[in-house]
Length: 112
Image 1: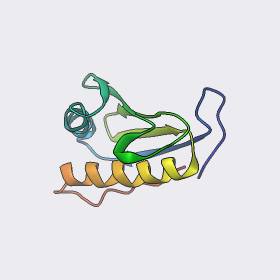
Image 2 (image 1 turned 135 degrees about the horizontal axis):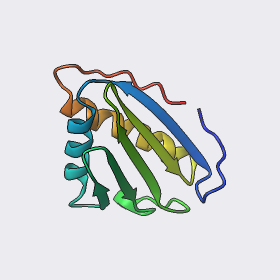
Image 3 (image 1 turned 60 degrees about the vertical axis):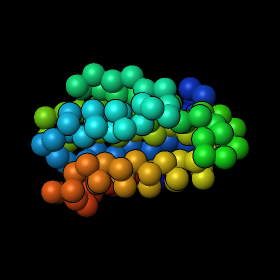
Image 4 (image 1 turned 180 degrees about the vertical axis):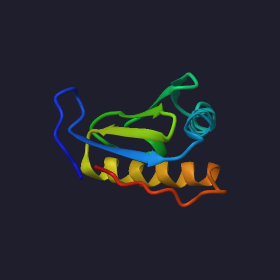
């Protein structure tokens, strides 16, 4: 589901993904993407900035993925500048986390 926001991004989605390994997956994903993108993370929270021109794209602006590790879930939020950018990142984030979570994948990403 796409919603309008007032903080720069025009499209956003959030998924609360049930897992007992949220912190581990958050850190693995952030470490995986830190060689290509601006990434900041702790054991409980991570942010990844996807440049507007990543992989040859030409989106209106950068997108931000925010990850929050809870005891029983990984809360993933994507703030994007275009519907296509949001959809692409929903798929990319889910695929990458599922790769790290291969023992319990596929995880249920119910984007809202």
